[in-house]
Image (tube, rainbow, N blue to C red):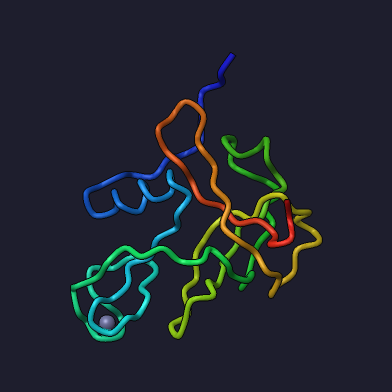
Amino acid sequence: MTATYVRPLPTISPQNQVFWDGLKERKFQVPRCDSCGAWNWSPYPACRECLSTDQTWTQVSGRGTVYSFAIVTRAPSAFADIAPYVWAWIELEEKPRTMLVQANVINCDPYALKIGDPVRIAFEDVPGEDITLYKFEPAGHE
Ligand SMILES: [Zn+2]
């Protein structure tokens, strides 16, 4: 028996289709400026360094560190079965501009997680849906 997926799903649009298609291929992509090379997360129509509108979705390493986080112990009903869980800001390693990605950190003890811990991207295929979501997990986890 396949349970219906009850959590919110992202809205796919022509502007973000490349990103979501990349996740299915296990690639986390960030708009990179064609003019100055800056990475621009979260996606925005213009480069935050030079305001160029020429950007290309470019794969990043998927490695980062925990910048800040909260442990959710009283979750909305759709998430109650996974509580307690971690909602975090992850700082990607690509520089010079700091990129903070909001995501869950999975495969960890929420109460053992610390700011600065190394993490890496993790992919989750949504059961019954043609979509892949991104999470992070401790970098040492196999
Ligand atoms: Zn730029």
